[in-house]
Length: 83
Image 1 (tube, helix red, strand yellow):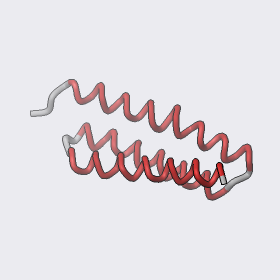
Image 2 (cartoon, rainbow, N blue to C red):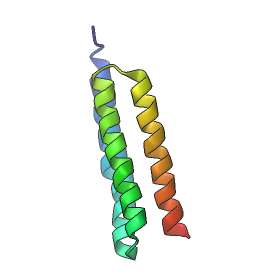
Image 3 (cartoon, rainbow, N blue to C red):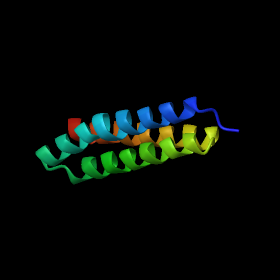
Image 4 (tube, rainbow, N blue to C red):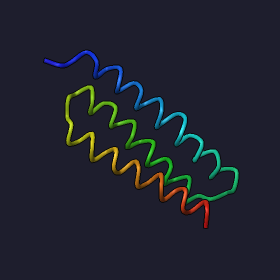
């Protein structure tokens, strides 16, 4: 049986990662005309978005893997923008 508190965490993950943080990376990549940075940020947003659903489905390993992928791709996007 699923804990109802997980729903709140899943929504927070979807909003915080996908909308605010990674959306800012996407906007910066578009502003500077960096396609690679944009696609890294898009991949990061997608992984973070799916991670929210992994919480809904009570899949902790999948959640951790997807959050790791999202973090690495967001770092890659920031690295491309910085250099």
